[in-house]
Length: 253
Picture 1 (cartoon, rainbow, N blue to C red):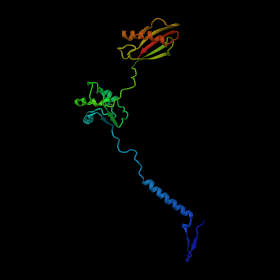
Picture 2: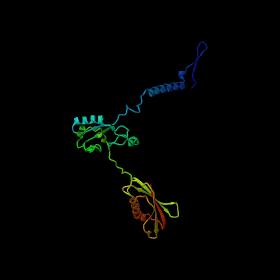
Picture 3: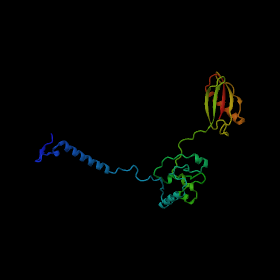
Picture 4: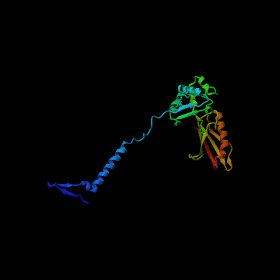
């Protein structure tokens, strides 16, 4: 539908836009967009983080509120190993300076509130003091590390065995390694934590297994270590399943 026009007495043509449906719809659409934009930009979105992150707090929940307050104040004043700081000093034992420098990895996040009760109270604050039977006994001591045991969890993963050396088996006429074994601490000699030299043995294997005893070609210079290595070969060599032939057994760091 086209817009109607009227001609005035002066010869001018007047276009009546308000009767044009396209103009009306464009006007309404502009008003709606304006109102929607006003509300969209006027609404405050919630912040990503409400306030600063607070450090975890330690609360001791005992039977006496007065003792609880003293314990909390004392822990804040004397704890030189606070749980909420990512530092290597977060331990209940005193470490050497070189070890402190190496242990710089951050600790995992702790809950915002760490509750300690009588059942969870550590039996020993550190390795230098006597066991603590009552929480109140901590207030009578001057040791700053007493509160460092709060929140600690005993390790559930067993320690890995300390590597003491490597055993390699070669065929007499071949330079390729036939067998490799990792030696743990204490296998060769309880008094030697790590091998400092190389031992070499000659081993003969027949149809039915090991023939005789291993022949020492190169020793370590310590009779106890050589004897322990010979005993180890005597016990373990039959389990290796080596085919018939002559072999060189090398034991070293």
